[in-house]
Length: 458
View (cartoon, rainbow, N blue to C red):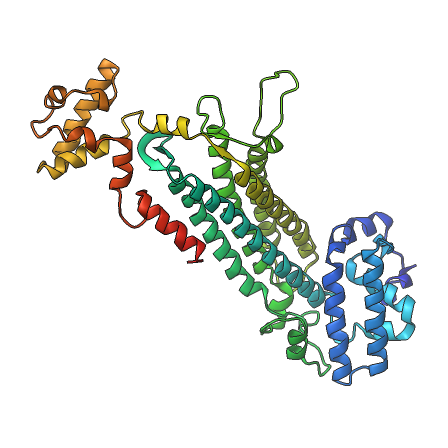
């Protein structure tokens, strides 16, 4: 039975059935089939070009691999746990189909550099998709910012009303976060996009291979420079999951705000029915399941990061079987991030903003108190003295259950003689927003400038 294994020549006893199942990776690495076949085609063509195997064999190998690809995509390929992984499954089937020529495909390579190549090819494609989904989400946020440019809401610190801001300004804060996520993914792509094939098991190969030719065939701009590192490096996967963890953290922060904003206490936004569910017992409920689930899935991605970091911790060079455990956390992270981004982009696009609720809340909680202090500073009072005077005014309002705009001029002057009739115009919500006319501020003109910059890709 051991001879059924492509590596079975060394063994005189068959692999224990449970060990075979325990060590196999085909159940999850079969998703690498396209990348495995693409890499094998490039490798075979290089072997033929270098005269390492006959060109006739190359033609048979390429034709056989294309046929296997079609079978897998048609659902007609039976994967075998006995053949362990995607590489052995495809190679064994190839040899069955084309005979001796199929056995020559593995010349000059190892499963160690083969799997390193497959993962890089796969992750490279997936990063492109993640970036596309990020762009979709950014576009959804910009759409909301554009169509709600006049809506004012309370800005918060410590979840306490702080200062009035434009809702659009709040949306642009998330645009900035997701732009950074996009930048991290694009930067990670550079380190993924390096060809490891040619490293062999750990020391290179004795055959006169042409790594640069293979890199050109597979659209890699460069090749790895150390064979030991080539087969044992998973930094690029850890980096991707790390960047994904930050991305999911951003999604969870926005999820939390959407959950709060959609409560009956806030009523700032209405999420589309398609992204919510009801209660099995309370007929009035509309639960924000999508943001809650995205918030929960954030911990899942954090766990994947810790899992892969732990797999690689103290791992000696070069390849070790531990590294088989890299794929499931990586694949799960990819699926989670892509799904979260896609559903979030659609949900944000369909979200309805309750301008009235936001506007009413924007003026509550003494949100223009800082504007009053700034008013006194412009009248010549030192800021710390102005801060103290306004603090006393707020305390007076709390005691008398009033808001600042309800104070009469006589009451204002109880706290400072610098107050005059122009105080009333200075402390409106709209005046507060537009007074912050600095780069990055919430004034409408500045927010419109930022929307244009984002639309122009800056």
